[in-house]
Amino acid sequence: MKRNDILWKSILEDTFDDFLRFFFPDADELFDFDLGFEYLDKELEQLFPPEKDRYAPKYVDKLVKVFTNEGSEEWILVHIEVQGYADKFFADRMFTYYYRIWDKYRRRTIAFAILTDENESFRPCKFEHSFLGTALTYQFNTFKVLDQSDQCLAESNNPFSQVILTVKAALSGKKLGEEDLLSLKIQLARRLLSRNIPKAKIGKLMIFLKFYVRLGKEELDEKFDSEIDTLTHNDKTTMGIEEYLLYDAEMTGLEKGIEKGREEKNTSFTKKLLQETSFPPEEIARLVDVPLEFVMEIKEKL
Image (cartoon, rainbow, N blue to C red):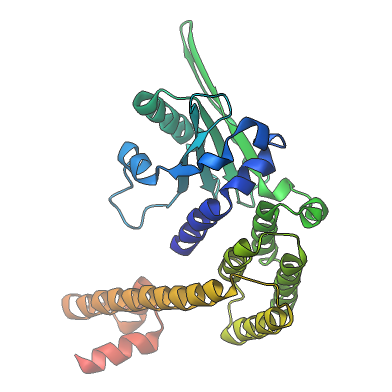
């Protein structure tokens, strides 16, 4: 979940102009792209502090200041939520974001909910509340990834279409075999390199593809990396791949750090159970969710 948060936050910034053009065909008439964008994530976090519990569900949220073509440097806000599982309180949370944003900025806000889950019936699009003649309805844009056409996305030259194709591939991966998923991932990489996409964005999109679609085995990852190496060496016009390789190394280091932290936590918990309870090793292994050999090794050291 943490890795997906990082990937989504990064790719939304890397392709935000494409994001606007993806949802608004007349985006260039509506917005002043020359003035750039201002990402207000820190301000959003102040309005909606994260849970103190580090194991609480994570949400990907972005708040972006966008200038319009209405003159006098008029600007609006774009609020984006990426939701990966069904949550009955999601619409409530969207409304809470809205009124806190309005209270601080008093600006027009466009809200998007990008739903990346597999639940066909989870389609929140508004928050409603009424009582004794007082009523409120807050409606927001909902984009269900499952609904999108693979063919339309594949034919599009908009880089954000490639982001959605990647997410769809990750969802499909739960139903495909390992080799089939590898083939699909390589196919997406080839398609990405063949599209008329600005060179500076190729590496960003490749990073998202590599880490979002998980193959689950080191040898499959190596096959994918080998294929990417072949493709990029054959395509002399491709730029941004150096950044991709650098990020690859950084993410690998991050994952190793996360794994080390998890192992340290499991070790500490196992020691505590061994020293302070009479639970048998088999029960401790079940409680900590580790192999029995892990528990026995720590017990021997103690």
